[in-house]
Length: 296
Image 1: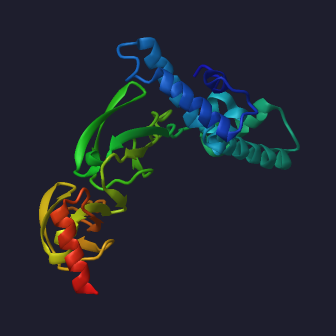
Image 2: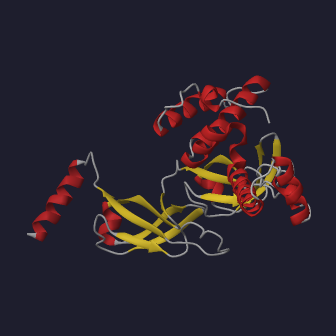
């Protein structure tokens, strides 16, 4: 694997802070995003390089490995483990025989362990593939129902099932869809973080929804029926007489789907906002004054 300078790709130095890495990534990701550069192969390649660099440098543990091992950073633990085992065998052998050449050690190791030494050479060690990280930007309505979607990760199309009820910021793992393993090692995993924008009139609280609706003064005083919007349709409500401003009613099962619980929903909480009439006519004012006198 050729060495790739992730710091250079993001335009930062090795002393960059986590905040500086995040800022540089966001700036470049916006600039080279495929949606802003349709059919631009150069921008597409640059966008993938930026994401790859961010995947490594935004993770403190991976960044430390990268700084130490360069392009081999994802196999750092395997290299260290193999190195330690080899050193232990060398130490044991030299302690028993009084110290010999590397060739003597290799021959002894081969005879003693039946060819096991070959497992500790880099070309034979099985390495787990690199984990990939991706972001998926959706709207709230997109996660109201379970659906399939195709993602492109490192030039590979991956069709995933997005369960209804996924939350903003949630990360799910797609096993085996990361980097390919080396020498027969297992593939890495793909971690997808969801960024869910909410442009609706509903405030989400896990699987519950909250909203406010206007209620005219007369219906609030006398009671009546009111048609309101839920997330997936309209319902009729019966308003009790003398309903006060700020009263909240609960519509059971009219909230958001519960994650990975098919057919189960949270509740919808509706808060009434009583609107006073304006631009009263003389006759209306007279009637209000009459009502006022009756209440005194």
